[in-house]
Amino acid sequence: MFKKALVFIAAIGLAGCFGGSKEFSIDNPTDKPLSVSIDNKEYTVPAGEMQNVTLSAGPHSLTLSTGETVKFSVLCAYGNSERSGIINPTRTRYVYVVQKYLADGTQPFTENGEVHVLKINGEEFTGPFTDLGNELFIDSHIKNWSFGPTESLPETVYASSKDTYKTKLFRVNDFIHYYNTDFSPSEDYSRRTHIRESAYKKPELSYNATEPELQQNLSDALKIYHQFIHADSASKQKDLMEQFEQQERAKWKNPKTKSAENARYYEVMSNINSVFWSSIVELSD
Image (spheres, rainbow, N blue to C red):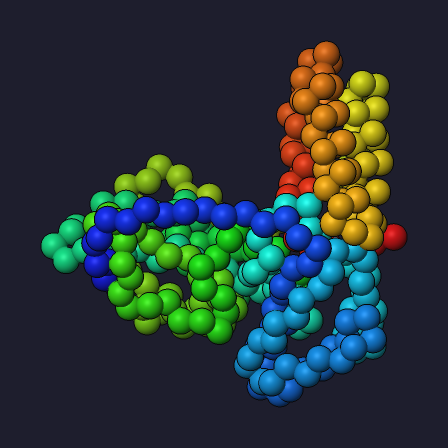
């Protein structure tokens, strides 16, 4: 189903924020209250709801209802303090959706987001959807959604164009309901020559490169990366981010080595770089 866009002309401002803390939402998609502890402070989230928590830059510990304790770090080198991500104690799968809005009389001709195929419980779902996986932390840096799991997409939005969109993060079961009751494709997908599957894959942050220069660059990048994710203040994180960017511009971005291995090198280096712009990361060591 297409939703309605009311057109008006407006100036839109974008704002960034560099601070010492960020806000996250603990999600409880179950039908019972859920308790977790962060740094020995207990939070009880009512059934089906979310609870916001503000956390300072640096390492923290999360204790789940199972007794499992996980270390993680809040990253404040970049980004807004609000809507920084989801803490996902139940490891629910999430789907990112792009919802089209049209002004009256406007005909759709394409989607506003990249079209993928999602496979859920043996069924296929095709549309402007992205699988965000079921990690313990869902970072809004990956996909910056307009509406979270417990927020509804509005029926009408005000926009400066006749064809616009909003984005939403769905719990997987809520996504299936949305797809079956409220989603209408904006184009004939059969006309596309190929539609890729969206299946979440944890980003690769290291590998054993056979080319000496590439391996040295990756080792140097990971050294700064590990210092960054363990830094205990936003100012230290920002300094390390600047150090990483300087090295990347000076050396890592354009290595002298040219081989078949470069494609994987660039992919892994890009994954490492992405963490510096993120809000939260699990600490494995």
